Image (cartoon, rainbow, N blue to C red; front, side, top):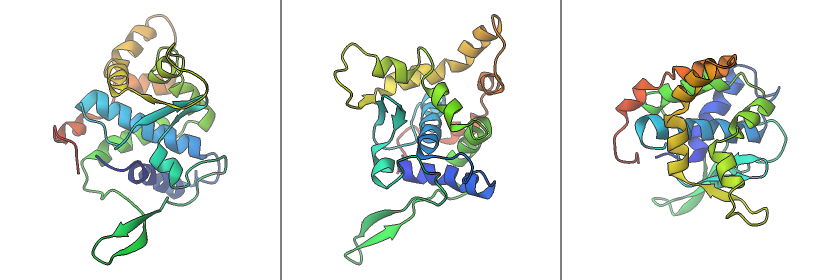
Length: 202
């Protein structure tokens, strides 16, 4: 699996390249995109792409690692996220910017996520993540939750939701008009994620 920062930097780089980072690209949208990538890969390939828990709070979802790295608040994210890590060989703390290589098999799926959800506003992505019956709602509105402390979303909850999302959209299409995003969810282009090994990536 990868760090949430590396996955986030893929989307931040795409937003910068397409001139979207200065328009409507707050941290909440970055966390949301990473969540969607993790969820779709968990549902389609059986293995998530991000280390650590996905957290649910009153506003939506977030990754503690990404938040701790400074991706938080309301200002647009206009540059890649860096972290301070120990360089064991040099024995020094150094600044690093985690990124995936273009050859990484995960990139194909991340690109589909970007094409599907990247054009959405941060508000729409938030609404999408908080959809009725979804992992966020089941976690945040669980009878077991007390107070306003963030809670981890169970991987099994995410896996079940995203694995069945395409058929759920198919059923919805018979009774109502789907949005463009929902139409794309009926036929997710994540087949290349089958290249992922069964064991977690290192």
